[in-house]
Amino acid sequence: MNKEKKKVQDVKTEETKEIKTDDVEVINPLEEENEKLRKEVDRLKNEYAKAYADTENTRKRLNAEAEMNKRYRIQSFALEVLPVIDNLERALAQQVETEEGKNYRKGVEMIYMQLVNALKNEGVEEVDVLDKPFDANFSQAIMTEKKEDVEPNTVIQVLQKGYKLKDRILRAAMVKVSE
Image 1: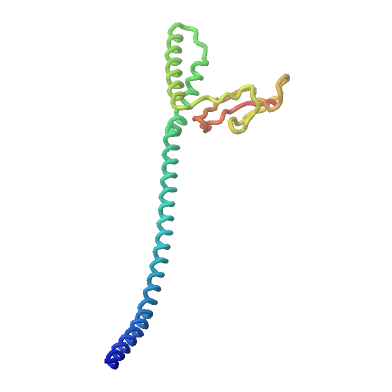
Image 2 (image 1 turned 180 degrees about the vertical axis):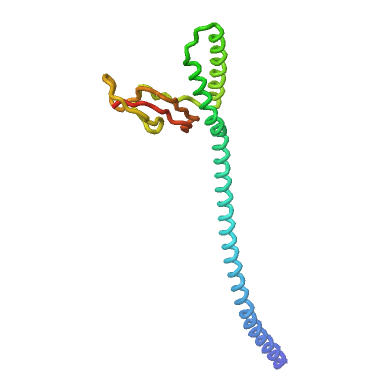
């Protein structure tokens, strides 16, 4: 019986040795595969974070562009209407002597005021540069003139009005500046 017990123990010991050796052989490839999978998960997480950041940046940029388009949607229309306003101002500057001419002038004045108010409601305003220091951001100097009692580099005459849309210059004023 002792011999049988010993044989059984020897067999178990050999099986244990075999199992341990087999386990190590099986565990090593599993650990390697596990490490590969961890690296793959890290790589995919990184790619996801990049894609998410790109998507967020694109969304923010598109929202900013949409806001800008909304804010300045009237710009091209206003640029086309400004010469009409100039012509209406020229018409209003003419002296009228007859009653019929005065009525006509009143109608032109009403149209002019409606147009100016409509543009003002959309954020288009005249740039006030007269009697102020010349600023190239708002004005374009067409002429200079030496004038007494006026500081040099001061706008002394507006030849064509300038306009801005909210905080953006639509058209710079054409001015005469003192020397």
